[in-house]
Amino acid sequence: MIHSAIVPVAGLGTRLLPATKSQPKEMLPVARKPIVQYVVEELAAAGIERILFVTGRGKSSIENHFDHDPELNRSLTQADKKALLDEIEFEKLQVHYFYTRQRLQLGLGDAVRCGENFAGPEPFLVALGDSIIGLNGHSTISRRLGEVYEQDGASCVIAVEEVPRELTSLYGVVAPASKGNVFQIADLVEKPAPEQAPSNLAIAGRYVFSPSIFEKLRKVKPDHRGEIQLTDAIRLLAASGERIIGVKLARGERRYDIGNFPSYFETFLEFALADPDYGARLRQHLKRLVR
Ligand code: UTP
Image (cartoon, rainbow, N blue to C red; front, side, top):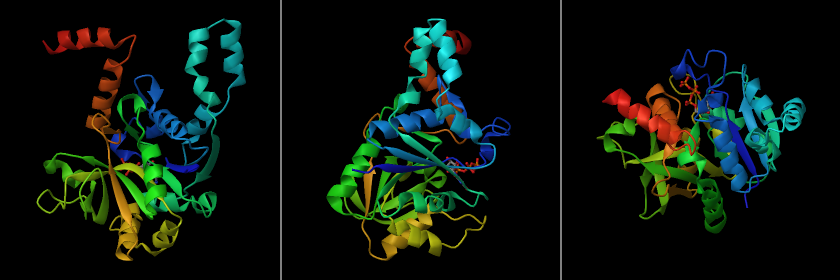
């Protein structure tokens, strides 16, 4: 069982400016909840007990969100607002939160490297703080990655999603070395043009690693933007003969990456339409708007 997860949330989120000028993109709401809450709830459901947020400047609202708020609790209890108290039940998740800062935004690989002491000698999960898996975050992918890691003895297990061929240049794409829903990965390519892409299987924001990834992260050279890419460290693992396994997301288990406006708008709309109280009303409103 994997007990620890690193959740990188230190990125600048420039593609969502001005919304992200003074608030973290991971705290933007999707329907009722901030994005990162869906991520944390998925991890808690997968049995994760310790979460390290790799944060940066201007990200303190994430810390506040997962902290207990006695004043708010008291006020809602006194006013007998049971339904609203239910909305902050997530404060009681059985998870210990840790925080560290990535001082310079030197890429996702560098953010993961900030978790080396936290992870210690144990395997750990990495879940991107700006990616929700499954409608309303209802996904078992993190648990499945952990199970495959334990059964297979691989160094790294990666969630992948089938994407339309013409969109491969937006993603890290894997080169499979075997078939099936759980398969071996020979190599990875960052943002390939469709004609150069080795498959249409895109890395989906969830990974399990053995601590050997840290040694590779130290060897990775910064890319043309000066960033240390996690994908490059995984390629080094593969090149040194270590087993890398891919696990496909199940049908209906889409990855919602909210890092750009088109995807954020679509995700918000889809989750809001699925809202048990307000979805039907929104659907009617949309019909009127597009008529
Ligand atoms: P992105 O690749 O979307 O980068 O990060 P970004 O910097 O946040 O966004 P843009 O490109 O400026 O719009 C994917 C995840 O990795 C984290 C982000 O917070 C996000 O959850 N990340 C990225 C870090 O923690 N540190 C980094 O240096 C970069």
